Amino acid sequence: MKLHLNFVNVPLPARIVSIVDEAPDIKTFVIRYDRSAQVLPGQFVMLFPGRLWEIPISVAWTGDEEIALTIARVGKVTSALFQMNVGDKIGVRGPYGRPWPMDLLRDGRVLFVIGGLGLAPVLMAFEQLNKATLVYGARSSRFLLYRDRYDRWKREGKEVLLTVDRASEEWDGHVGVVTTLLDEEIVSSHDYAVVAGPPIMMKFASEMLEKLGMESDRIFLTLENHMKCGVGLCGHCRVGDKYVCVDGPVFSLKEIRRLEEWAAGEVI
Amino acid sequence: MLKRLTWEQVRDVLRNLEGMGYTVLHPAKNEFGDWIPRQGIPERWPEDFPNYLFPFLREIVLPSTEPVFDTADYRPIFHTYGKIAFFGARPCDATALAYTDAFYLERLFRDKHYEKRRKDLFVISVACTRPCENSFCRTMGAGPFAGKGFDIQLYPVEGLWYAEAGSDAARELLRDYPDADAGRLEEWRKKVLERFPLYDRTKLRYPVPSPVRDFLSDRCFSCGGCIWLCPTCTCYNERQPAGLNVVVREQDACLLSGYHRLAKGASLRPTMKEMMGFRYECKLGIGFCTGCGRCSTTCIGYAAMDAYLEKTLGGE
Image (tube, rainbow over all chains, first blue to last red; front, side, top):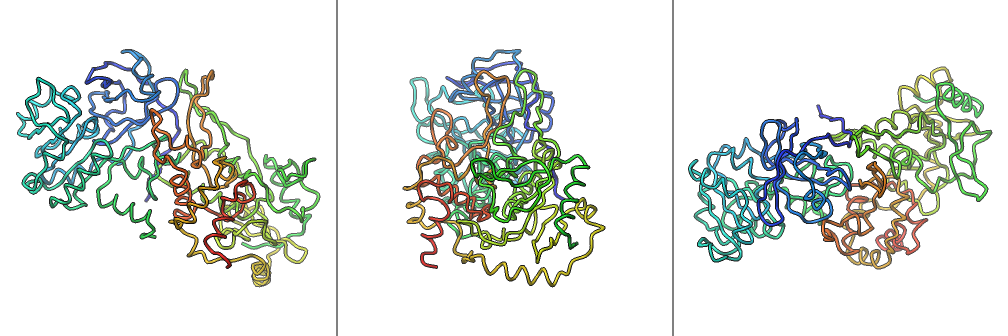
């Protein structure tokens, strides 16, 4: 039986309970939202800052009736959000979207290949898995997110490999784009890969993972696309014959290849 | 269920619908010679009615602009027209309605705004006997008769009206009328079908060959006219209009650059060719085109379906 959910495109009123500075022009908004328990790793919510329009934002982590959204100031709506304060009313709808395939990922060792703000949509998944390695790159050390969690992850037995595109004076770690940390050894010691970050980084990282021996149905990516509704109706996020908001945002590389074939007319 | 009615009995059905609280709309010409839906029971069926230029059925279920919620208290706003019996819908538009029903009501999320208005809509389509200008509905399986999307479909057969019921409400309304001869209707349908052009549907598919896509995108003015008039174009945008405390959803057009614009002015599809490809992916790849021909009628640049057909099929 197909499940239909009634959808009324109206956000629910919620409150900002804290705002954390993560990096220059990147903040985490913690919002009191009573549907937080429904959020699965990799899902997103539609956020309405009280004016303008709604935008889709991945949920970084959830707490007791709380969701945390890590947001970069880029356009009009995020600029409006950055003017908001603790205690302000904010509209939230969701959670929406296909989450990371956690049942599958729990069965194996998972390699997370992440760039910049891409750490937000994978944070819950990474923290819930026991056998996981994080390969994480950012523009510079100031842009590495959630730095206070790295030691805990290492104590839990997870490997954390960091890199920056440009090193500052205090940085003594690896320098270079995130794919420079990938080699045959690290790929062959993992069963699955999760890739998130800027589109160009995801393209190169997933191609490299495949070249190093990871099969395309074991590589998962999150496509963050232009969305207006989040529920598959407004049409904006369509890629080929799929709607990123309901058929994704998580896709395997194999599914993405099929979309490319569809667009080329090879699948009817 | 197939019934046989006289014109007076068709009017009785419309009167019954009025009695059930429906506002009956029928095609009529205004003072400028445009076909518009007019309220009331028509005296006669207008033989010269091709179709409305504007897709009124789409407009009833999905208004071009509608308020959705109040920004002060997040109260939902439901915009409704009340109960409407739409008499004289053409089969292509009934088929388009079936497409939008499937999209808005039968996928993961069911749109309550759409559903409320759809429940209040009773569609009486009238089968076509002549092709409209620019139409290729037979090729797209949406005309001259609809297979879905109607409550009642009427066929003007030999001075009578054969009525096919498409819903339980229609079966109830038509119950007491005499049965019609299905064989006779089939013969009539065959004769009518011959008047409608049939192209090779297998050639009309995505991806559009690059020279055709380039021709269309070079000629497109990006006015959006084809999309405002397409009965299956329902993409929408949501925003708060300046100075108003409501968020509205309004129809959006994928041949306008704003549709693809991201934060800070970036664009997913910065060129006309990419936008044109995106449109044809939807209309032919997914299959939302009914072949009604409105886009060709309104296009000022020869960049719509007529140009596409000419360029793809050549002399066929």
